Image (tube, rainbow, N blue to C red; front, top):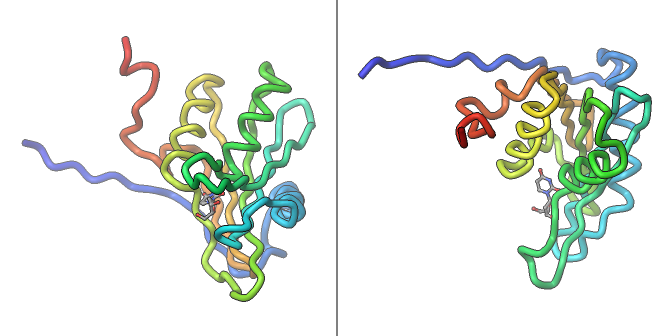
Length: 161
Ligand code: THU
């Protein structure tokens, strides 16, 4: 066996003023989306905003359900809506953030494994990298360019051939 090492690249900042204007704008939309989440069970309101090559921004928030697994994460709500409405547009970037009642989430909300898989699917489909911006309730923000930095050794359509 040959042991190999993978390098994941990301940028991190404690100050949203240091973000690119377009990233900061998308994060603001995600914050607005988080306020509209339906999260009565976790009170962990996640918001996502997807920026498309046609200039549209599509938002989503987590939608929970009394039958817990029937709910869906904010990222997938936004991505599926964006792909349904604008299937020919390239997904350029996705911003994710959170809104809670009683805690102050400092660590950026990192997309879960299932959402990463969905992001990787769209990246594979469009053959263009997706930029992912994620933040907590305060200034700390992580920016990743391309899903190879969030989900290496990905299972894609290529594996089905
Ligand atoms: N959640 C998201 O919306 N996105 C993530 O990436 C992580 C988790 C939601 C699912 C559930 O409604 C709540 O956060 C607590 O897990």
